[in-house]
Length: 348
Figure 1 (tube, helix red, strand yellow):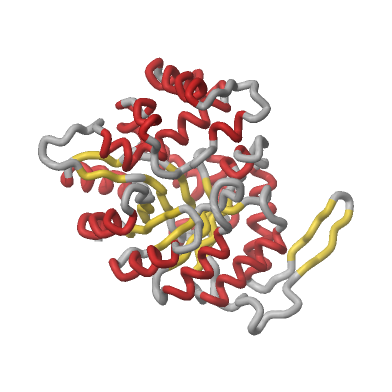
Figure 2 (cartoon, rainbow, N blue to C red; figure 1 turned 30 degrees about the vertical axis):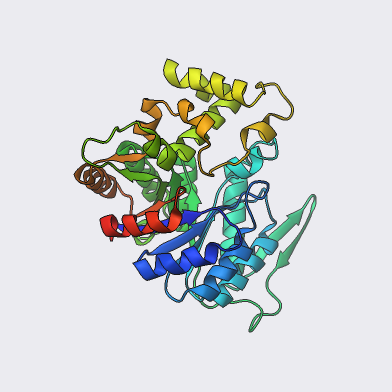
């Protein structure tokens, strides 16, 4: 299985991208969450200058953040700096919208935005609409300004069949976050292939899983603090979603639902607080704070981390690969450079 690294966007991340390339990783990604992290295109431009081979991914942008022409200019500018190395992930803006206290956009908006972005970055025309007005737009200056010649790889963020079908119709790949059960990956792949307009097109795209990973030493506690520090940021993101989404919370086991209640108390907020998003998303996907460790109950470790002995982790990765995952993208949060080195020894 191919392997990649994902980090939060910030100055200095280009040094980690260069190290990831040196270690042999296939891709290097940054998140696109404006009110939590830095700008992904600024960070990836620095990464482009610091690297030569590794593919650079936006994980993921959204119609809720930028218009298609603005996003196309950013993607195609990056493509001019790193020709043919750009992966553009697109989603409904689940996190990026929730950090604003808003809800994600619709799957229909996701599809129209991705289609426009795909056409514009390839130098084709696309519709542009603002209210009741519409026009046809395309890049008017290329050459040194943007690169529309080298292809951009598009992937659609999906947790269910509707978004997977969008990927199929657009000939795009798939990306998902913290999804370790192989059964949903099989279902996502089936939905994408069923919607594909080209019978073989879906099989030419890539599927990415963003995750966390920890290899246990002999006799090490599977639920100890080092494990929680390595995988807790993704588990905590599930609790945050449950704190905002009553239906998701209602489906949780009692132990996890109780952790949601403790999270709200520790942040001094309630589900009806108009500033709930400001309390919940502070340090989102950053290193787990010591006071949040007790929130990461054992079932969350089992669900949201690839945790086990070396043989157990390799076996789980093999099962995911057989279910349709092409590339595993890991976020190291404790000591990123040292963790990348350990991951390279295990995965590459």
